[in-house]
Image (cartoon, rainbow, N blue to C red; front, side, top):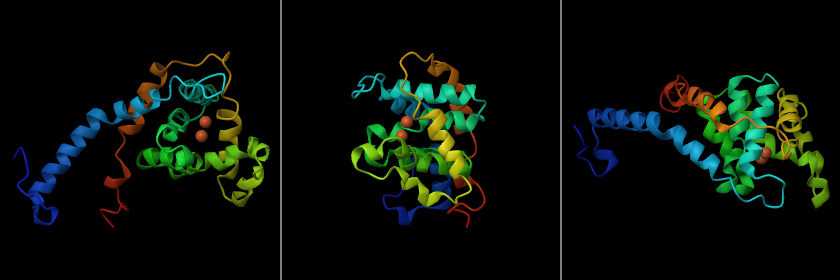
Length: 193
Ligand SMILES: [Fe+2]
Ligand SMILES: [Fe+2]
């Protein structure tokens, strides 16, 4: 088989869907990381008033996580935490968290998903907002982890004089994390439950 016969999904056979799954998996293994890194690189250029652009900010975030001894998926999460900025600026935390979710722990997912509101602690009061909006999560088991992420790997990553590691340092880590079996193939996924 090199192509399915149906034009409406309701008419597909098990054999055809197995074939499509193979095609999708092979394409994902070949291209997913390149697409993600391509989106990361789209943030290079405009500084938007800061001293560095969002791409450099991302490298700096990952570099600080790496030098802090964070586990590999957290370094990757730091590298990718703002990738949604180019297409979903108002909910970029959720965007990045969703990209990572099938391949990382629930804890890492939660930290990335909530980094925006935790980051607000550093500046929302200057814009008439509530810097303590994160307090609604005070009792959450990962509150301190998300606060640390923002304190140590985000709010302090706008320094043009900090020596970032190049993307080449992180690319093998990204490839290892995204080579994990995604949650859709694990027990408990929407497919198997
Ligand atoms: Fe962010
Ligand atoms: Fe950031």
